Amino acid sequence: MIKSILKLFSVVFISTSLTVISTVASAEITINWPSIWVGKDSKSTVISELVDEFNAANSGSIKVVIEEQTDYDIYAQKLTAQISTGDLPDIFTVGADLLDILHRSGKAMDLAPHVASDSHWSNVYPDGALESNMMGGQLTNLPYELFVTPVTYNKKLLKAAGYDEFPATYDEFFKMCEAVTATGKVCTSQMTAKNAWTSMLWFSQALASAGGPNVYDRGLDDPAFVKAFEVMEKMYQYTTSDAVGADAGVSGGHFLNERTAVFMNGPWFIARYTSDGIPGLHENIGVAPAPMLTGGEGAPGGYVGGKQSSLAAGKQSDPAKEEAVVKFLKWLTTPENVARLSYSSGAMFIVKADLPSDMDRLFIEMNEQKGNAPYVAKTFMNGMGSLPIVSEFPQALSALALGEVTPEGAVEMLKDAE
Image 1: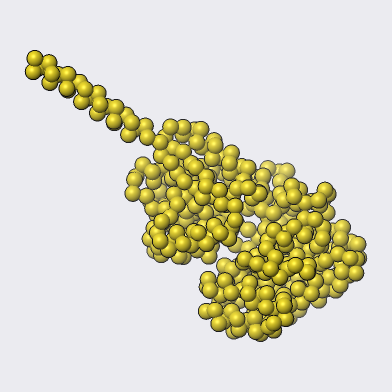
Image 2 (image 1 turned 45 degrees about the horizontal axis):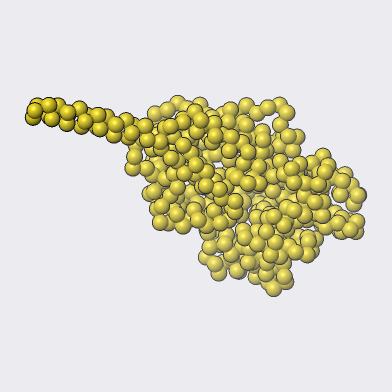
């Protein structure tokens, strides 16, 4: 009787143990991704497809869950706080301005061992691309999206003002603005809210034109900063009445609806010229390098751009989850998938990918101009390397636009923020 009970207990115990082991073995790993590539973002459709395809291929073992982040600025603020507390998401995108802080936090996954043990990475990245991102022997991010920010202009509106080509100098540019104003249209889209993105790009172009691409190395005492604010002071004479306090949606909306003739943004905006612009807008758009300041240290054709976003992951205590995260990162960096993203959105990526021959003509023109550019200078946001200064910039720009400070005073506001 006792032997029978023991035998029954053993069977039940073994059966229960096998069930537990089976349950553990089949437990699905969830990867949370707070993503900004959702909603109206030009990459949203393909990103959603890629996540669905990855989940289908790994059904029952790995599932990526997107947490929609529709406001870029709020996402950046949230990520900054998460880096500070060390409570990082499983996977996330990070801007160039936060890469150093991310590395120093010690909470990001070190991808160097995975890169060293898998030929995938050396096959998909250009030589030196990953090595240049190493800090202290660690690789806490994968360079991913690049950007350049040429001028985009409405050829129809410029032609109505008597211009068949975009001006090469700021002297000619402001003459053109006078001519555009005379037709009843507004020349440029500007803004000062949040990070003042569009206007920050114009400022960056003027700064590189005045002081050359390495102007940030010399700091705020360089005269180029005053000259760049002088350009912006005049720029606000030829913009919409709601520019002070306007955000990117307002600034871009004016151009998409042909209320302004000139705009500045990155290649990711290309798809929106068709999807959100008035009928026929895309056909009327041209791209060109920004104007040059006479006597400046920059070179004609110079571009402004840099790293738009890198892929990163939070440090994991579970080796299985770490491998799952790396597997998804490999999926996002597969050349065929990157080509799909680039083709659908117009975004540029550092991953090597064979792009279709029928890429959007604006993307092709931007890419060609970038290739012929004597330099691609950093934006002010990335070049200054000081978050307090970058954060003060919109306030300085607003004060300048309202006539509350001179260009010299705007520079002093930035200095006081250090």
